[in-house]
Amino acid sequence: MLYALFIHGSPFQTKACHSALSFAKTIIASKEHQLKGVFFYQDAVLIGNRFNQCPRDEFDIQAAWQTLSKDYGIELTLCIAAAVRRGIMSEPESKRYELESASLASQFQLEGLGTFVSFMNDCDKIISFK
Image (cartoon, rainbow, N blue to C red; front, side, top):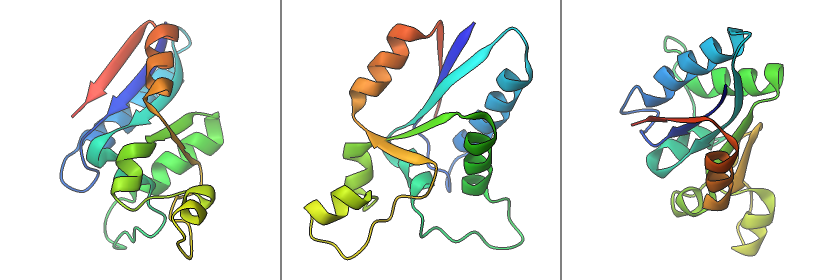
């Protein structure tokens, strides 16, 4: 079965990103299932801000997602409208808005809702984390 994850809870105020990460690891460990990608929406896009600084005594959820993406080739997509609204921009977006630097963390990409619609069409299940 082919899955995609839809996360829209803040990585700092909810456990949505943590729960989704655990679920993603379970899918990856399964021989019967595959994870096509993860779409972060609303406040969940804050996970992709490269300027996030995790205290040393806390679990670094951003780094955990980045490692998962690197190790397994999982696509991590932030909704571009939600991300830009929250100051998260890729290099091309930062130039477009005449800003000095990009704030998009490595392993994350900015895409429109069309990517989520593609996930809906391609996948057997979309699991939402609020």
